[in-house]
Image (cartoon, rainbow, N blue to C red; front, side, top):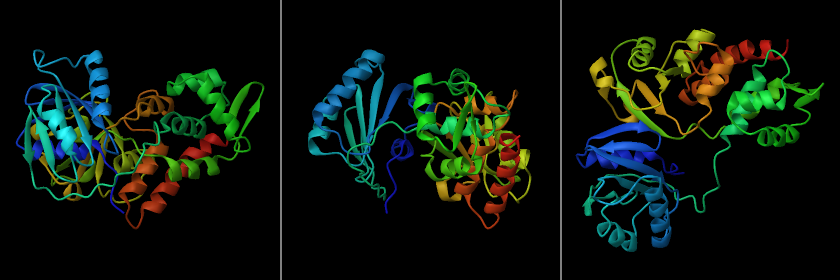
Length: 328
């Protein structure tokens, strides 16, 4: 099955066209000095959809050519109607991944890249990041907490927490107005099996240095960078030989200065994820007062994604570390 569309595919088209791309956040780029708001659509929008999206972006700050700010829409392919619209609209850029078309500055480029992205049909709605953050904080809770406290820890509403907890009755329980996980093993497995991923943008880099050093060097380039995957597991519950460095950052990192080279995804030794999931730093702070890593549940998900023959044992060791706290 072809992969789903991601922001990375659109950024690859920008870079392949010779444009210089800097990542300010999961939805904000600077392309050849031009501020760009990034939107990704898993199915091709209609021309009226595009104009509605552009009008909304203009209200948020994308104006017209006098401000030199643009909206970039990444989609599976570019129909003729949308190509015509983008070629006539100065503050609209479009990237079609399957047909390798980039319309930038009202000019169309056919880049000839080979890609195969699945058009998933009508979008399924916002990913359930809040629910999955709630799973994580319940798993490493030292003591039962109120809905208000849980909501504050993950940055969501009490109503959203209440609904999720009701759906999980039997796996969680309430006593004296406070909630805790009573079957943390089931909650752990549910998270690993259902987490939709952090979304956002992934930068791929390569270095010959040891994996842990690569992660630490990346972390040293900017505040608020969190280790994940093998590097986080090595910090929280050491076990396996690291296979790939992985960090989460709030914007792109200046790794060329740290002697990294840009790389293709399948050749990278380091991945920098600029996530769309807004809960990652909150759950890291819930796990540790001075976090240098993501929380261990997310770290385990990333270890499984990295894979390898000893990934299962590394995940089990993280699980034991977490579940010991949940079962106190």
